[in-house]
Image (cartoon, rainbow, N blue to C red; front, side, top):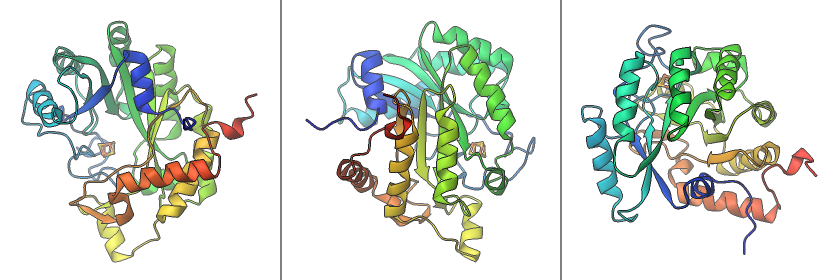
Length: 307
Ligand code: SF4
């Protein structure tokens, strides 16, 4: 039997719910303060027109209709008895008055076989009232919040126009942790100007935080995101697949074994992806990561000297 080299989301969900659990993406009809002019009108530089929710059904559909559609699409792959996490993915999914959040989340939770919700948002979009409500939800369902940190380096966060600083992130994270609300962060590897050491400094920083999980992927240059015009005008170097896999391996060594690895590579919307094209073949990248971890005997937390 193959040794388990990292704690995958699949393992975590099976352990928590006793069986396979599938995430169904939702566009809850929110927007984002980094796009609607409250912070900026430009958005994060890598963010697509759909608010990084390229695989969600149309926001014009109700939450129930979106879940129904996604569920039906997956019936050929997974049994009709499967359990689901409703994943509020597009834009900033806590950027609305509390009554609106409650209505949308409760609609998702009332869908048959939904056993929890995942909420992608920004740390500057989580009011104390919203956190109190999420805490209440944790007593009756599985909840996690996803924060798009991407990097800890101010030069990079300015470059990507993230629109909040590290203090804001830390303050919100600690409020969530104080209420035992699971929190997952997103990291982007390969931001222009970042060295492998810079990326691993981000990994070291997050390894010391009260997080439950991490999602990482290569920077995608999408035709429908602001980064595209910069790239087309003056193409900057992007990581090769081998460089990316090396950094993923080094990062995994730094992450504590209890962190759930939600994603080690992402597949950007293929019809808009300009570069790097190797990310299109997600299955190949995942197999190459597995092979690399095996031949180099890398496992999550290897560099932490835990024993
Ligand atoms: S915070 Fe999220 S939705 Fe808003 S611009 Fe950045 S990536 Fe897009």
